[in-house]
Image (tube, rainbow, N blue to C red; front, side, top):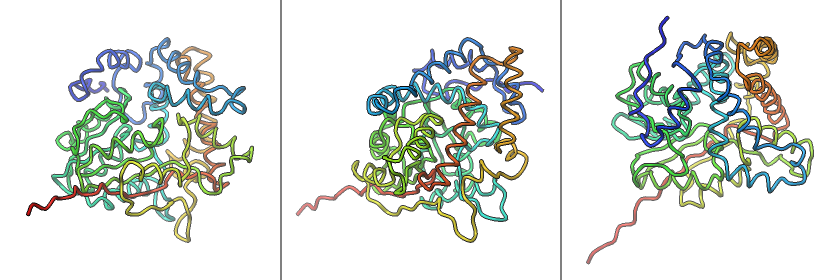
Length: 384
């Protein structure tokens, strides 16, 4: 089967030409077939993939983590954009291999497939925002566009623009939109979401699915969202946070949370209270908030997506499936069929899965602290 034609870079902000050329050299031809994980990783440039791995791991220092935490967090915040860009150059193909085109968790309802739960989780945000055809909507940190495309369809064709600072993911977003016939209702911009290239009040609504956590500080991205949202518009978000059960003085808790940060390119996790404080501090009015990680009679824990997943793709995310993939990559690395950095990425993600499950079981972490906020309407001045 022929590879899809390369997407026109006019779909991406045109002031990143060097980064785009580097991305194309690193990742090779666009491959959209979900069963082509090994094809995608084997065509990567060996030298550039190794450099991406080194660039990411340079932000983490286990030996100094305990006694120099504040200094290391500051360093990661200073280099957050480059760190996260390198991270997604390394992990995007792994994520599509195990998760499909939507890289996030969801409330897991009994009797429903993982894919059904994922789509419902995405549609829930569109429902909360009341999206409809003709509205201008922004997806902050859009990944490869899975949630964005689902929300376009669920809303009856609202136009959704995705912003993402990783050129590889933006290219894949645009290619998928062409493949699925949604180009007229989607747009994609490669840019730093703490410095958005949009005018004030450009969007009717904004959403983000487990992405703003990559910001150096939540206030930075929330402030930009406030600026580009029209007065009276709403922002709905799923945020990664520590819960009230997290105890910074507990070494076991610290190990798990720092493992989550390292395994997911997070400078520093906020608590749910800090998250609420951050979104209010930039001017938003709180409409509602809830931690959707809680379970009831109709649901099972969110981390079962990693611990006890269902279905064929679920097997790939399971402990057994991850171990099999890692073993196979070990052999392929020794034979030099895959570039340096691939095996290390596999280990990084396996470790991340283990600490995410541990954080969920301890109740100290949630990947779905959900809130809906509103930008107050402009005050009108009465002329007498």
